Image (tube, rainbow, N blue to C red):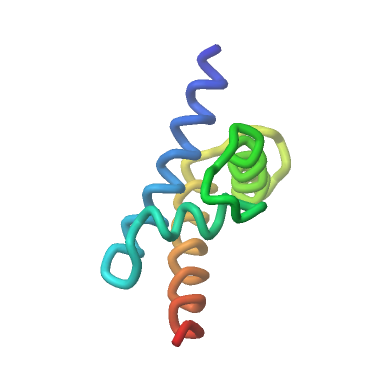
Length: 92
């Protein structure tokens, strides 16, 4: 239970870091839905949420030990910022 809570909290932090960076350019909900609403129906289903969080966790877990270290989270934060900035430069 504690591990699940920690994973969920970490994923929420990752989502909010992306959203926080996007406020100046896009509305936060637009960013969330753009990334999570795979079927583009205007809703993020439980399955879409879990899939997005699982992908994010796997991307953050560089050594593939199914645990996130502080270093992996910090590195991921920088990677996400760079990726987001790059994506924002490409948008008209």
